[in-house]
Image 1 (spheres, one colour):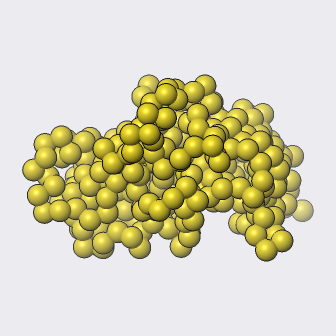
Image 2 (cartoon, helix red, strand yellow):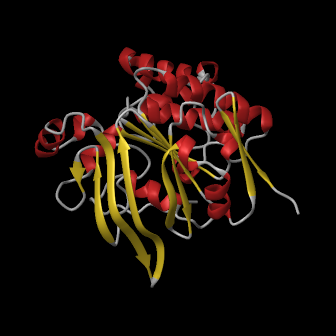
Length: 298
């Protein structure tokens, strides 16, 4: 499970703050931001824990409306970077700006209403016997526990159905969470993030635990989601090039907490950089929008 710290203040790590629950100062500050040209900007970002550097000197510009893949082996700092973008962790040093707000200079909690964070690390906070449609509906309010009458609110019901439909899961509305397959659960996690109409969507290893069919089915839905004109700016963390949706247009390769390469995906994903990131000799191929990495055997 991924532990979430909350440097910005006490708030549930399981979902975004409801816009209705913002302080007037927070709402005013956030509304003044508008739509910045960069969804995120990181400069010389380092996380140091007990003398160990989890991230080291990371620079990143994420343009609004573009989609970024963060790739690297286990322990390379991918999830730590995602927690920073989710505003649940501050760096030890460096500058971070997300959706126009600078860390250390603003209350970040209101931002969480605009950030959809999808991670299996949040699963223990969700009741296994909850039914899917009310669980997605209550996420729009930043909640985990759906009151019995939540679907009486037609706006919430419609938003939940729409979010499930966007990930091909509208048929799951009456199911209980504990009856779902891994692929179905992942669709519900993403729907809970989408129901808030996020500006920034963060996907932490969305294909983990899926078989080949489940992966390809979810990939097709993510392809459609990210290609839509109103798609949120998206950051997807994965170990595998084969798991990249076609719409991903930028990539960041990490190794040992440091950046190996960053930029447009067709410039970053080549034999040399992917081999350096994963410390194995790799041949990279790109065909019909899909990427593939094959280890070269001696």
